Image 1 (cartoon, helix red, strand yellow):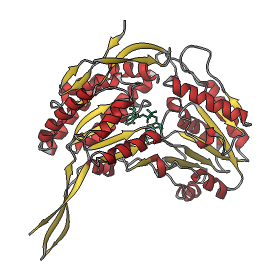
Image 2 (cartoon, rainbow, N blue to C red):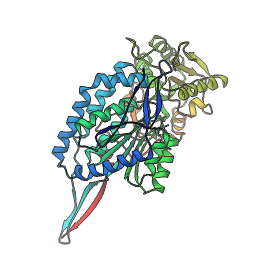
Image 3 (spheres, rainbow, N blue to C red):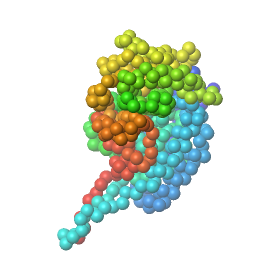
Image 4 (tube, rainbow, N blue to C red):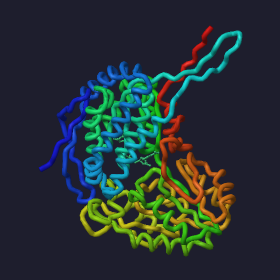
Amino acid sequence: MQTTATHTIDGESVEGVEFFDVINPATASAFARAPDATPEQLDRAVTAARRAFEKWRAVPGEERGAILRGFAAAIRAQTQELAQLLTREQGKPLGAAIREIESTASRIEGLLSFELTPEMLRSDERGRVVLDYRPLGVVGAIAPWNSPVLLGVQIAAQALVTGNSVILKPSPFTPLATLKLGEIAAEALPRGLFNTLSGGNDLGRWMTQHAGIDKIGFVGSIATGKSVLASAASSNLKRVSLELGGNDAAIVLDDADVDAIAPKLFWSAFQNSGQRCMAIKRVFVHESLAERLGSALARLAKQVKVGDGFEPGVELGPVQNRPQFERVLGLIEDAIERGGRALVGGAALDRPGYFVAPTVIAGVAEGVRLVDEEQFGPVLPLLTFADIEAAVTRANATRFGLGASVWSADAQRAADIARRLEAGTVWVNAHGGSDPGIPFGGFKESGLGRGLGSMGLKSYVEPRVLHLP
Ligand code: NAD
């Protein structure tokens, strides 16, 4: 029998009026129902969040920290239950789901180590000028389906730490672990401070248009990010932070040690079945190493155990949903039609669920969709170059700008090239990973603003200048 989840509004479980099915991507069948929020339910959540904000903003920092540490501990105490829901709805292996929940708790704790203290801008015979920071009010958090708990809470935690209240909307593909989190918040946090509502894209749109919401923290695709920004501007000019898609390049120089870097490159591209904003999505390899690197990546792809995230030993799960599964297969087919060669994989697995064999495609270049677009799935194009100047130009010739990396035996040489890449984060001999203390975000269409660190927290407050005698 299917279970039915509930929203959490003003500290209480609220039943849905309409529902939608939640699909397990490892079986392609529905296993639960989630409530589809109505505009009235959103209004109730906004009213509750506003009330909670007025109290929360006045809570002294130390007390606020203690309450949020309690929330993190409550999440950690329910790791198993949350992780099971996450694997069932998202598809990732159970071990990865457990790590996502643990990172979620430590992200809240990590963000608490920053304090936005007032700054004295001037102090002389004319008087004192002080800059301080005020919370914004009610923050709407809109999350994607690839790491739904971590990314949803990351927005929420930045809002809460800085004195705001939250309404969190998970993706309709992965609502359940987040709705469970709402129940945990109802026990651990003041009433109405952290509300969770599930629904379709309409709910997201209503949030961006709602005059009672002061800011949207959004993580998702570029196309949706642009409509969020337009809608926020045309309502109450609400503040917006956008963490959007990427098409990260990894440049492998002619002196790289192929055997040493291949496993790191592989996992930086294929972890979570490639469904990570900061996954390597284009490899530019010097032509002298292309064949060896292609063989090494293909060998690794063959060894990986792909399957249902609950099966012991599984390292990669399915693609999360049917539209994305069909899109990834379409990108592979298109690349092969245009002269690409699958060194490994190249098709869906012959079993129920949205499984795509880990795929590496050589013989493609710009102009092929797999190279120009964000694949967000377990398929990696391998591009070759002869001249490093051309590789830098090609890596930068994109509307994306989230991450990039340079791989070489000579760290100094790699760092010099890294400085020329147009991306929010650039790594040398590594790729991927985030930390609550380190700002993350994109150049160009990969985002607006930065999340995490004190830079991220400053986007959840309004700076105020005080002129004092
Ligand atoms: P998506 O844009 O389709 O959906 C994201 C969220 O927006 C969902 O909750 C969805 O219901 C909601 N939504 C849809 N239409 C809306 C609208 N008109 N107004 C408001 N909300 C709306 O993205 P997705 O497919 O869930 O996620 C994958 C994308 O997210 C990829 O491009 C990936 O790179 C990106 N991503 C970025 C980061 C980052 O930190 N930069 C992290 C993870 C994922």
